[in-house]
Image (cartoon, rainbow over all chains, first blue to last red; front, side, top):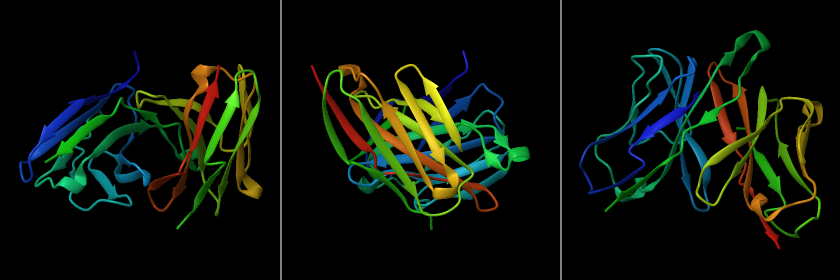
Length: 117
Length: 110
């Protein structure tokens, strides 16, 4: 089954304790992205990756790191989490339809609910 | 940067009614998607529609890229249609950034 998976689905942690949220897709998509969703602020893009070893900042990259060493995986790293990073996080992937000049349809993972105390 | 506005912000319908949700965007975009977020938080793909019209059952969507808007039509609404509907646009900045609208919260009464 074609899908985007995220782990863990739920996480409660303490301020300053490094954590990684994994994201994996099995559709051979070039493009992957992370979003966070907060009440009143909606969904905002954190980082995206056009392909292996190519990453770029979205609108809210502060406090996050990413890496893209393999095409299928795009982990989100919080090196020193703070309470303001409590949020619902989504990973997504897509084909890059460069020949049409646009991004393909994005498919989203189930979300990771993170609480930082 | 590009602004994405959705209207109405909230909508209450009686089961069986029809509705139209709107998404306006402030500049040229490469693509547009509509999503439904169910009460469990899952984002469900509805339409990938950079331009033109598509239909899927009781739902249809139209994007007029030259006029910078998209419409999502829901006909014969059902209680399971309740949730939040988002549009999202992607645009080329050297890479592809994505901006979501604030959403339309729909509640369908039985």
